[in-house]
Length: 238
View 1 (cartoon, rainbow, N blue to C red):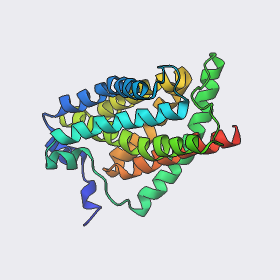
View 2 (view 1 turned 180 degrees about the vertical axis):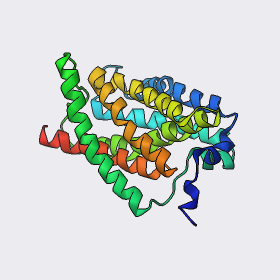
View 3 (view 1 turned 135 degrees about the horizontal axis):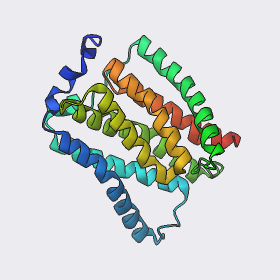
């Protein structure tokens, strides 16, 4: 396959999603209700109260809820619509270099945004756990590092961004809408400071998605960022 030819303008890539913007928006809006349902079901089966889940379990269950929403959206789309919403292609060397550069920039984004939010009294929350327990380590690796990045990229920078573009939104407007929604949904997990960081950081995978026309680069960037944040930062106590 000629991968370079697949990276033409966004309008041709997402044309099959015309009329599916409601599915895209509905899927994103369903994430939190489905997450709460997953917590209720698992809590009922295990006898765990709503506030008794440890953070790694919260991250894992949130990832599974996203996967369930993604599966529902996938089921109602036609094969052509799925290809338009979830373009995963072998990345070129140039795209991989862009991913590496974006990862480094993302580290700077974290330092700048946390310094700014800290000056207003807001600190990033949600990373207070120990990796010494094998079950905790497994939950973190499976949830935020392996499952979460790919599922979230497929949902937000795949289905949602593609649906907005197909509806006639400009790339700038569609990107802004996707970024704001993606940042907002992380506030309950990481607080205001974390939400600000995620919102600003989201510029990077969104730019990769629009520049290269696929979700492989953004997903790799997301996975690298989460591996660093959820594993390296926690392990080093940074």
